[in-house]
Structures are given as structure tokens and as C-alpha cells.
Length: 157
Length: 202
Image (cartoon, rainbow over all chains, first blue to last red; front, side):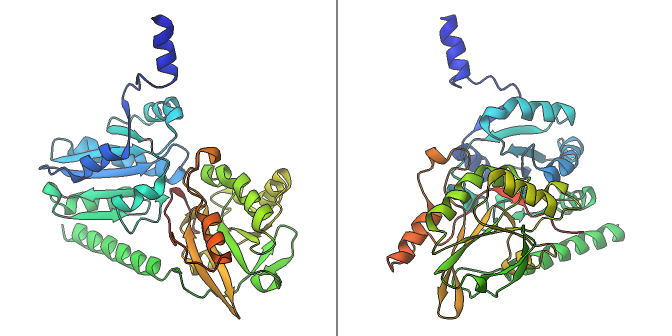
């Protein structure tokens, strides 16, 4: 039994990711399309992406300032699913408490357009969805803290 | 408050302007303008230098990006397989000030280490990447010669699995070349892939 558990862990049958959930595209798609009374701020990033790591603390700040004010931040890591330890270490180092998922989907062409048709595929990239999905805005760019704060503020969450 | 609104308006203007800049990018079917860039052997290279080719596989790539690295072997393979008719023209557009790994000297080093069988050009002014509207590395533009024109036939990724070449099931560039060679329509003229953003100069 013990051997089986180890084997299952190693091969990823049992997910023990701690605070990172490894997801597939349909899960993210469902979240994007779900109507809720909160603004959704979905940031696509990876640990190796320097501009992503530079702006990650700004998203964390939005999470801390707005989590009780109808704004939900979701950080979608595009790191390899085999590198969750590296992702977790990076999150600890940056004191990230916002929700993080790792999107384990390498067949990019199958889902990038579904996030936003204007997305060419570079990261960082951010999708902002208003309450009840009335409007969506997509940004293929690195935010400054001020730009991000102004954007969230302008949504009057 | 007024200050904040002004900033919001300014950032909005900025975003609109960026969107306009992006939309001027080359699309499939567009004729491209030739360029002249410095190769790792310090010689200037233009598309017109490849007199006998049928087209080009232009790849915006770089040294530092994990996706670019993941595709290095496959770019080498493209050159080996199709280079005679469709030579690989690799172009590094990244700002070496922000990313020293992508400096001209490091391009030479990387090319030597990996024995690149293709030209590896330095787009130091970033003007070629801007002209193409390239946004990331790797970013492929398959071009076919039509008389005196160089026409874009495909834009996107090399295949559908950056992590594992052996696990890829769709070979976009190879399929596009096969279609061109057979005089058939390319079934997937554009694909999207995650890549490292091109590091523009400040």
C-alpha cells in the first residue's frame, strides 16, 4: 500500500500541491464564464518570467486591499506542472496569499483565443472581468502598480 | 480625485495606443519589407541574399527565454530539413540592457555552443520586430517568395507541445511548408502559443 501511495504521488495520481491547484483548461474556462457578484482579476504568469515577477506583488496588493470589496484575484501559473515546488517557493518568497492555480495545458493554441482573441500569447497578461461578466478587458502587458490600482479603482467594485 | 481620473484616462489612452500599434502588425497574406541585420559572423544579412530559396522561416527568438530554449533543437531541425528552400532566419530582438543574456556577444556564444546551422541576426534597434509586430519569443513567420514579393503564409508556433517535442501531435510549420510545396492551401494559417514577451527598450 505504502509503495502504491509513493508511486501514485510520483506519477501525480494524488495531488498534494498544498496551496497550488493544478488545473486543466475546462476548469479555468468555467471560472472565467461563471457569473458572480465580484470582479475577477486573472493574471497569467510564470516564475521564469521577469516582468511577471515584477508585477506579481501589485496583484497581491490588490488581493489584500480588495478581497473584502468584491474583487477576486486569481494568479494562473504557466510553469510546468513538474515544477510546483519552484512555484511554491517563489510564492513564499514573495509572500503571495492570493489564490494560485497552475494551468497544465501545453497545447496553447487550443485555449489562448478562448481567454481573449487579441492575446498573441506573451506573458504577463491579465484578464479583468466585471461583476456578473458584463464586460471583459484583456491586457497583454506588464502593469505598474499605479496602472493596476487605477484600473481596479475605475471598476468601482 | 480629478488627478486619479486623469491618470485613469491617461492609462486608457496608453492602452488604446498600444492596441493601435499592435494592429499594424503583419498578417498572413501581407508582403513584407526586406531588412538588413547583423549576423553572428558580423556580416550584414538581408532576405535578398538567399537568391535560390523559395521562402524563409523567420523566427524571432532569443537566448534567455525558456520557450525559445525549448524550441532550439526543433529550429535546428527545421533548418536541416527545409533550409535549402526555406532557410531559417533567426532574429533576436531583445534589449540587451535589460537582458544581458541576449547581448550580441552572448548570441555568438549560444550559436557556437549549439552549433546553429542558420543565421542568427541581431535586431539591435528592434525595428524589424516592430515592423513585423512580433510580440514574443519564439514567434515564427513562414514566408514564401511570389515573384519579387515575400508573402507571409503562416504566423505562430512550431508545434503544439513546447515541453516535449516527441509528444507534439500537430506540426504547424512543417505542415504549412508541405502545403506550400504541394500547392495546397495551408489549413492552419495562424496559431497561438505562450512565449516570453519581447523585451522592448525603455
